[in-house]
Image (cartoon, rainbow over all chains, first blue to last red):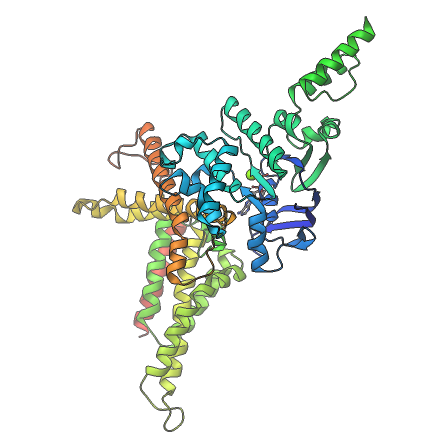
Amino acid sequence: MAEIITENLEHRYGAGTPFEHVAIRNVSLRFAPGEMVFLAGHTGSGKSTFIQHLNALLAPTAGRVLLDGEDINRSKASRRDTRRKVGLVFQYPEYQLFEETVRKDIAFGPRNMGLSEAEIDERVSEAADFAGVGEEQFDRSPLELSGGQKRRIAIAGVMAMRPSVLILDEPTAGLDPRGSRLLMENLRTYREKTGATLLIVSHSMEDAARYAGRIVVFREGEVCLDGTPAEVFAHPETVYEAGLVLPKTAEIARLLKQQGIPVDNPAYTRELLLEAICRAAGLQA
Amino acid sequence: MLKDITIGQYFPGDSILHRLDPRAKLIAVFLYIVALFVNSSWLANAVMLILTIILMAVSGIPPRHILRGLRPMLFIILLTGILNLFFTKGTPVLPGWIITWEGISQTIKMMLRITMLIIGTFLLTYTTSPMQITDGLEYLLSPLKRLHVPVHELTLIMSMALRFIPTLIEETDKIMSAQKSRGADFETGGLVQRAKALIPVLVPLFVSSFRRADELAVAMESRCYHGGEGRTRMHELVYTRRDIVAICLAVALLGLLIILR
Ligand SMILES: Nc1ncnc2c1ncn2[C@@H]1O[C@H](COP(=O)(O)OP(=O)(O)O)[C@@H](O)[C@H]1O
Ligand SMILES: [Mg+2]
């Protein structure tokens, strides 16, 4: 299992040109094996830049990334190794499909790893199952499928490499509510069955509240909040300052509190809100 | 990264060069290039050098930036220099040597002129947005419409191409990163292997370019685009006094260099 640590990570785009821009600075985080972490933040806060450091696609302009205690940028071989252990699904990954058939496309990663045909087949079936790609699609061209289906194929393509850490950049962006719900459920199942670490970039605080074990909030390239959903949503001001919103239930709890009704916890799920309201009502009755 | 290729890319600013009419700049650059080659005396080279330095100073673009833009051209400049150095006939520097005094002076002049040529054109593209350049070209070439040259269509294609180059570079970068994440390797192996490694990049790139072209066509049609006939412009180009002055100065310079020949 893999532990990722970043130490004072900084990234400047266009260093030394008039367009120099510091996208992230001072990001020191630790991701324990098996964690389910949501990375949230306003557009442009540096989330995508950050995650591309975790599998050595971007090299930090300062600081280090350690995978199981070793700097991932120490050599070309270590970078390649890292990409096998840390799988990254880009935003709108459906645009990267290129093979003639779905099966071949999902097999691209495992094939690059030099696995045997039998092993590749096994992994393709497994990954397709995890990502919700039906077997009946295997021999079709990815280009003739719907956007949502393509996205699942692209996600399966990364899962098929069996990474210890799976990172997804806004996996539900542009999906319909049901599609995105199903995808989140798939991802949760994936993590439960494989024990992989899951890092998900998302704007959806509802999803974060429901699925995250931990939420890291980025603001202007720096981490401004890091903790369990309960800890993070206990700082609504900071959440708003980061350009995000609270889950609706937490918002309702906050409004009730402003009205003088004593709901105490940050009720970030329906169950918690219900409980808080009952408690408040019980007290008043 | 591919993104770092910024040769001659527009550098926004507010210098006098930025404010000149693009047509005036196109004409002036054309005359400047002709001037570079009509007279090869040391005096002419000195005049052009001083002019180039003044233009660089006036443009407000950091000299460092201009010099960095020259770097990719260094090979061409050096190659021309070397060819001139070895293949110019004349008096040998030392008896029996292939290098001649004429060759040395020719090399210096040639390298100087090519450098100035590149700087001159860079100053045009640095201070003029691609949109302005194509607009200017369309105006200047519009007499050719009488000869049924599709000037409007050609310049439209050019401005779209320019507009989409950064998008395409960004997209290529992104797809390459995505495929690298899936273990694609673009850096090792022989020529054939490397060319094959590009398939996973080129296919999605083509697909998305066609999609983008489609979307663009629909967007243009839904705004009633119907070609150049009778189309008015948002920014009419108007010559001002300084444009006239700039063109006159360029003509005068060229005339002077021809007389001094
Ligand atoms: N390739 C790039 N070149 C230059 N600047 C970039 C590049 N990618 C991102 N940026 C800038 O870095 C900042 C962070 O971007 P990004 O990491 O994409 O944020 P997010 O994913 O949180 O929206 C933004 O200001 C963005 O404009
Ligand atoms: Mg992003």
